Structure formats: C-alpha cells, structure tokens
Length: 116
Image 1 (cartoon, rainbow, N blue to C red):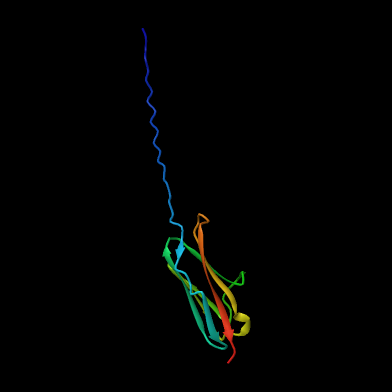
Image 2: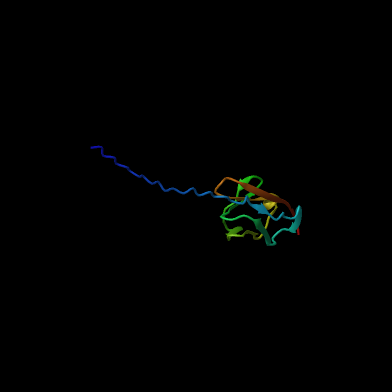
C-alpha cells in the first residue's frame, strides 16, 4: 500500500515601497539691507516635500534660539526672527530643509546691517 502525503505551505509577504519627494524651497531674496536695532523676519517656505526638518545657519554656523534669534518651525515653513539686529548679525543666512532620506534643499540670503 502506497501512501502519499501532500503538504501545502503558503507564504504571504508584502513589499512596501516608500517614495519621498525631495524637498524644494521657495528661494529667499538675494540680499537684504536693514538698519541696526530693527527686527528682521525671514521665512523659509516649502514648495514640495513632507516630513521635513529645517535648519538655519549664519555664515555656516548653526543658529539656535537666544535673546536675539527666534526660530519657529511648522510642517511647511520655518520662521527666523532676528530682533534688535547689530552689525554682528550681518552675513549669509541659509535655510536647509531635509527629509529622512537625507535629501535636502538650501536657500540663502545676504543680510547687510546699516548703522542708524
């Protein structure tokens, strides 16, 4: 007597592809002249992209919140407010938007501080 056994093994799997749109920023104005002791708002706006981290720099040094610098981030923009600006606040400001896939975009402006 011959016995035959069939074993059916079923595998289920799924492949999830995650595609992220690289961030694209609206360019900042090329340069801005401002008077000492004034307040300067700079807005870095996202044109496309999601799950973005924003970072501001002045002359390639990372900026953080302090008594003269306020950074407010949202999912679609970052607002940098410079208060009571002095000559030392002059230079190249850059906003960098990056996603979790290490894709990024940068926009920049030159701020010139004029005496009163």
